[in-house]
Amino acid sequence: MSNTIASGMPATFPGTMPTSPTAPTGAEGQEGGFGATLRNAVDRVGELSDASDQAVSGLVQGERQDIHNVMIAVEKADIAFQLMLQVRNKILNAYQEVSKMQF
Image (spheres, helix red, strand yellow):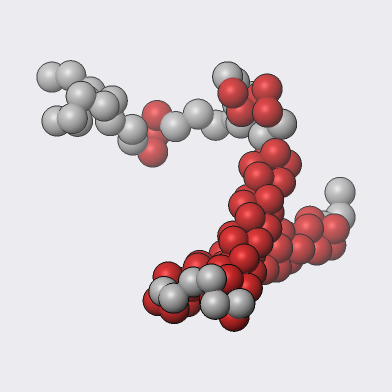
């Protein structure tokens, strides 16, 4: 009996998980890992905010008539910003917990 799931992916069981962290490989190691991912996410939130600002500006100036798409753009930017704040809060809480540890 092989150790694969029906999709052809190898099955992973708790006893077979690596016990030590592995170094980043491939694109993750080249792009900077967590820091680069976080930076890209913040940049994406900024892009969504800029797009919603442009949509609202176009609506106010009369260049756009589709208020539905403008509201969708504004909500996307708002949700992305709220998510970014929650991620920031989780990172700060984790940092504070680590800083409380005594070695």
